[in-house]
Length: 81
Image 1 (tube, one colour):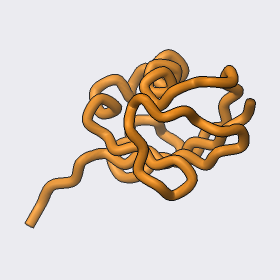
Image 2 (cartoon, one colour):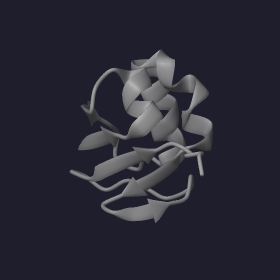
Image 3 (cartoon, helix red, strand yellow):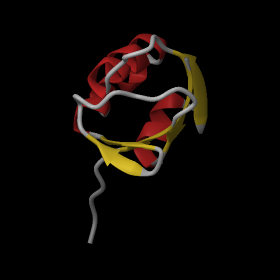
Image 4 (tube, one colour):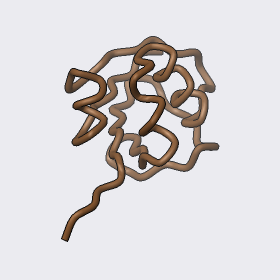
């Protein structure tokens, strides 16, 4: 299966890119995707545990399965006032 992962804010800065396309196994969960992203882009290890993940524009839980051709957004925590 193929998915497209979009990076925003700090995640984009750490990944040094806006988007990455990955091939994942059928039945991959959001939790497993986080681990795959760290393997692919180790600099994301510091931000991914606290980032929100959206699958096809819907916030996802770590136990949710990722469908084929999904668009995934990695949204790190924000701060400021």
